[in-house]
Image (tube, rainbow over all chains, first blue to last red; front, side):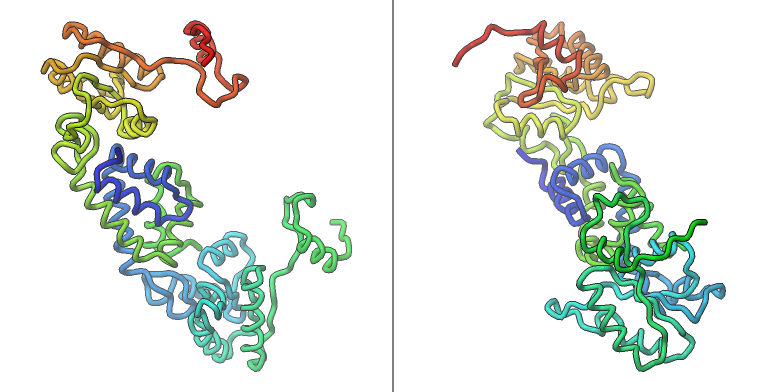
Length: 201
Length: 201
């Protein structure tokens, strides 16, 4: 026995969500049908509306249903600083950490020639045009510290080199609050090489 | 900064799913908008269709979009055995364990007078009418081994006592493959009291 065809389809459909296997999908379908039909209705309607209306900000390419996102519209950000990230989630993480008051540019991925992801797929033409406007003084390349992220940062650096902007990259090192025992070797040796004079505050 | 209003609404809407907190909801919304719009569209459509069409089987009350579910329709089940469960998920678990070849009755919950869940809310009028048809010889009360499940089983037992059917309950004991060290005391003493003669096979 399995459930009825439509209930089975519902379980299958939940598998599209990240980290949702067969057991979780079953639990979600049951919960929705048994106890949360109004919430399920609302979820479905918001999904359809978001898929229809949410696109990329025309200036920074973050996800938004507006033409230009709130952060690009804000008059309280520093136009001379631009932080390039791979995803809206990375952008949010940096915003929540606080401290950075410039603008953003979201790639929605990284260069991956084998998968057909070239410079235009990640909006580098738009990024170059943005830098060519002349307001930006420093571009922080905050792509992920992975092979693909590094390669993308290098590509962007050479692309922007002729525009006379300062280019920077996030510092590498041991994560705050972590235990050295669990930090990988690559990170540890980066942290050793980049060691700083001890400052007693 | 947060995301745009519509993206925020999408994240909030995902919180309706069981076990989905703010971080997971964000990951789901991002995944859907960044990489899975067709799958998201399908998920939303199936949710709406299921909420609209899935109701209770007229005979056993399990979830189905048909009037009578496939299992109630099946001619290959034993009409003399009826297993009463709290949820369709419990029914599926018993089916997947194999061995039981009778019919089911799904309560969709347990008696909970303080929450206004009385006998009719869990379909006991339908259950009594079903037993009164006279085909059923044994009712297996497979409600959960919780206080509420036990109370519900006792209530059903007294309700059906005048119909002359045999009533049974799932055996209590240590779970197969578990380690005694981690079995709770209530279960252990039940298993001791219900100990069986050792049969070397």
